Length: 283
Image (tube, rainbow, N blue to C red):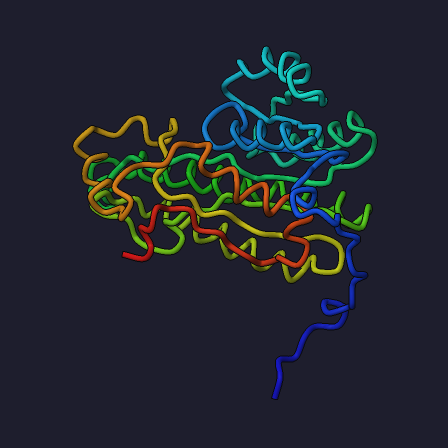
């Protein structure tokens, strides 16, 4: 017997009108894209790539306001509209208001949303930290889950309403190879658990929203970003011995996966996760 599918989830959708030339399928011209965690690292490079592909871009930041000084120059450089928005992702009301503001600022629509912002866990083994300070352990655990899971939830809840109303949209969540494996030698249970939750959130929403939007995720491996900058050289060297390609990625190496999932080239992809980890999960 086949699977029983909930009523409405498998409603046939119209076939997309795709460009004849394959490169045009990857174009984002005429689309509005929104990226959280866009003040640096992967999020910044994704936002730049989307602008280069022709999208108008809303770049979200929280603690790093420097991007607000760049958007005018980026707009001129790429011939699109780029704006910066300050938002605390753990505040659901603020996230909702930011999404509404972006929708108004960009002509009443948002085609692409990348929920990328996140924080690492650098506190080592859970029990070691708990024995040292139960209060600090609880605080750090809540911090990672609040930003990496609740922040994504807040974004998804807010943008989902926009996508449903306009009848289309692409939500891309940044998960991690840590959603698929347990990293060694460092201990990072909070981060691993959070990214596993994000991965399954993506798949769950892909099914829920199949009638009006696509939801996918990207799982980066070790990338040279501020999230990894605090590690010792010894730790980085150890990571490189475990990565078949023998090195960390640079943030720009992630953007191809995001561009594919944002564009019409992935019109039949939903519930998909793209691992970009230099082969780590294969080893």
